[in-house]
Image 1 (tube, each protein chain N blue to C red):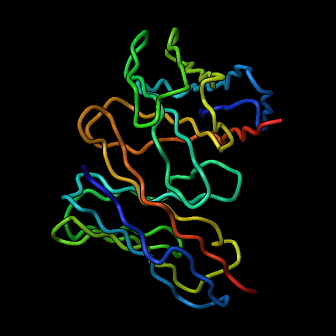
Image 2 (cartoon, rainbow over the protein chains, first blue to last red):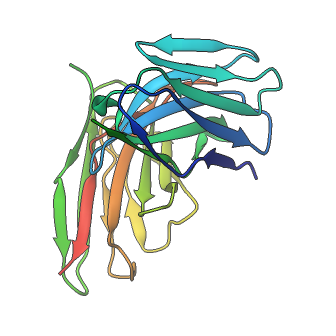
Length: 111
Length: 113
């Protein structure tokens, strides 16, 4: 079965620094999603990637999907305390409407 | 605004008690899901439903039950058979399509008394 591995598991950065979170799949991705979660809250959809080499940006967050469609990266430029939270990658649906998720990357931004 | 509403936000269960978590959506989405989230772990699928009056077990369905009598509603019952119910529960929905993101509710945190 397909699995998503995220790295790093946690990240602490100084405000203003850039950072990258990676998501690697054991199989070809046909839909890759990035979500952000604050503690005790639901997941907020950030971006969806479908095509190999695709890149999307939203404010200071950029997500890319590699040409082979097995790895995605999320890059935050000039991080701010508001970027803190848990970032999860998700993929699917595979088979009958099932989605899978990575274990998440916990980001802390020091002011 | 359209969205997914989960209630209650916090829930406490006594030994031997069944509890029901509510999930309502007004997005006109066909598919609905229930996930369990534990610290340090990703989301694990409990049940999902593609259409009204039909649902399928996910990876960790034991000790849980669901119903889908209306398109907008997908309640989850945590039964007394679920021996370790303490977790954060998330409901999600999406359109019937090949590649579409899921939309999530704000979650319900269930604890044991």
